Length: 238
Image 1 (cartoon, helix red, strand yellow):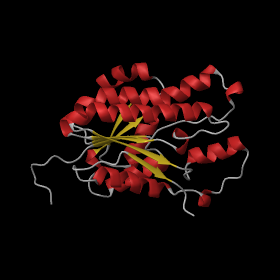
Image 2: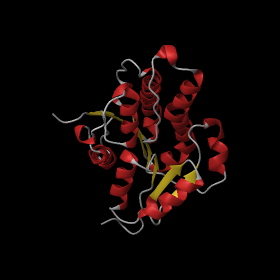
Image 3: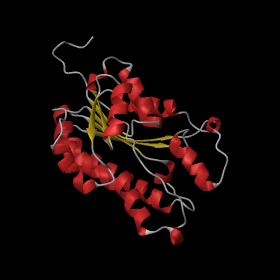
Image 4: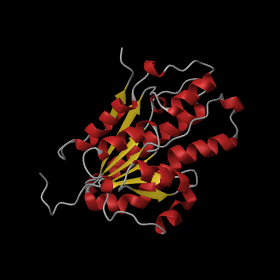
């Protein structure tokens, strides 16, 4: 049992409205009070929905798709004094060949999947350092190898890997751990959208359950301080 003077762990999760983020949030909430849970959400409607789903949790309203406005948005809202983990789950995908992908798609994909997480991490680093916390990036198999049609998304996820690698080296002295998890196809609303874009029938039973990815994330977060998981690939079972 934790000493009464030990602060309760605090976790800030992006993309907790569905899929992997929601599974992780439920698992963390099941460990006790949701008071240590913070969720970054895009608008007030989602904030109300999340608050109803996780009583006691708190929300921060900001748009990862507008990285240049994140600092102002966070400055106007309450944040935890220390942060044990920042888990980046939110992301967008728009498939298409490079020859047909216009700058709007590139801008949105890179903002939400890469520049937004980089800026959010930068802004929260003092709180992560104070707790000797943990930054977890939910990447993708496309962050290691991108096939036809996956140019914009794959580029954003390759960039996210580089961000994590650099951050890990830079913040080691401050005791901040950095983990990247590369899930294969996972049964989430995003995967259903991918199948529509691919013109394929979607069968969620073929793919990884979000709970399995959440288990991987919790394994990384729970690892004793003498070690860290740096890069973990999770693939659909045989």
